[in-house]
Length: 114
Length: 134
Length: 120
Image (cartoon, rainbow over all chains, first blue to last red; front, side):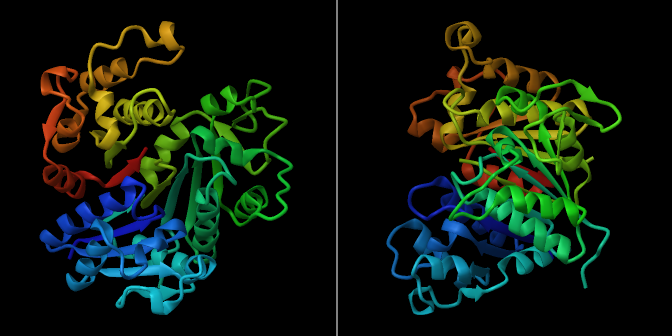
């Protein structure tokens, strides 16, 4: 199966990077591609639960549509976001770089970083 | 199992310390090298400021030191000559023996190079990631 | 040779991103790669025609000429239809040869053709 791997460093509401993630990851699922989203830096702010607006809704929908979403544990901790404040279903990992690289280098047919 | 023959290409377009981009680049590059992948980094636009020698941040991740570690581990780091010249890093011509433009201000770990250094990365890297889109 | 997508998300002159991205696109084309330049968000301003000597007026290189070079070298340039509408840009205000596509088509194009995706 074709597989899309995305690395997101942008926050959810002030930048087009997160918005773009929504459009292209949905398009990939529509084409039956596997999708994994990796949130690092300010990208982890997309993982915060109870968000209003497009990106928060997309993250929920992404999880429902069997996309995998990973968030950097260090970046979350640094921003004071506890596991209980993260949308259920998002995998929090201490080794986001290692996980991303394994996916991007060994599995993905398309890799996008914003 | 990782395939050790694979290469990761990375473009950095933003300066260190102004954003986390350079930190992400260095952390991913080091992790990739530790996992056995090849790594080629191209510093482009304000990304060339990462090559400045003598960086000494007090409370921030030291990007210069990280680039030196990456080069020691076998990572290849090039920076754009046009961008470097504009920002005052180039103080000599092209050194054929060293295959780089001369600079007394840049880290040894970084080779100032034509843009075609990046085009080769685009062509040859198994995976390409870019940082600094906004 | 990989198929390359270069995304431009900035207007032509406020930041170096646009010039630098189009420069990469041209260099990739000169090495025989297939290149699609995607103008999205504020990047659609870069698709507008009629620049008057930016080098003379504001000491910056003409991105319109870069787009023309890319089209001349058989590169593809697409602009996001929704981003154009939002900014009041009509298709006859664009550089000749730029294709206007809906976001969904652009996403499909990126997924199909973007073996290497470079975002500026």
